[in-house]
Image 1 (tube, rainbow, N blue to C red):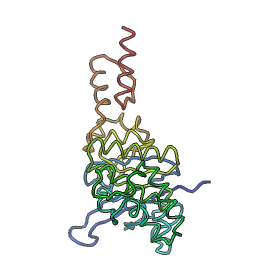
Image 2 (image 1 turned 30 degrees about the vertical axis):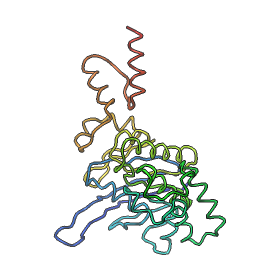
Image 3 (image 1 turned 180 degrees about the horizontal axis):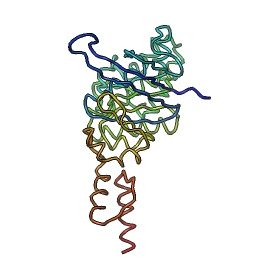
Image 4 (image 1 turned 45 degrees about the horizontal axis):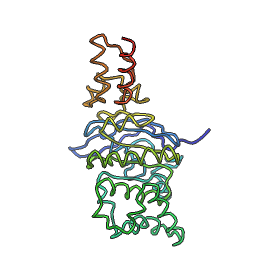
Length: 283
């Protein structure tokens, strides 16, 4: 039986444990993510989704329970770097991950610290930057790039470490729509073409529908887990958790109240247009 990429068993995490301000950010989480999956984790602010992300590469250690990364317990300090090389982390603000004055130097930083030979570093840097379509900017200063370009360089820096999984903690939150599209196109391609496991923390529903699986968090627990079509069919539960739903999904629900019957699971504008055209052709 194949080992899951990530497995959380009865995981709880307390901030300020033992103090009057003690707060449970995660409450008895059980979750398994297999190799090659693309999982979006959504939830309102304070739901625990970013705390969950930080457990996936041992930035945080559970107060109770166990987190396994490819079967390795994150509580074992001897395997810390193995875990972090397996699960690369990309954060919300790409500027916090920039350390050099040129793009190619920035991407080389991680492998250099691992002691990777110089020739192999050059190969990895080129491959990583080509993968995120940023090779032509290799000599550029990071601070001159757009937000979406910076985030793609940050992703390249993680890819140069050759991780098996990417954990993205709201990587598009600070970007404009164009930058978000650039980053999401890259993430989808990495999962589809290279089989990299992706855990994408987001509050944008349009990004969540790109995943193969959506996990919904509320008050430190998991309240829904399934395909986008399954999860976004629970409109009332999502709204009770303080979340929006894709606009076309809500539109389909409203139309159904006016006896305009559309199939369930409409998540994109393209699908909505196709279904409306289909109905119109039958009139």
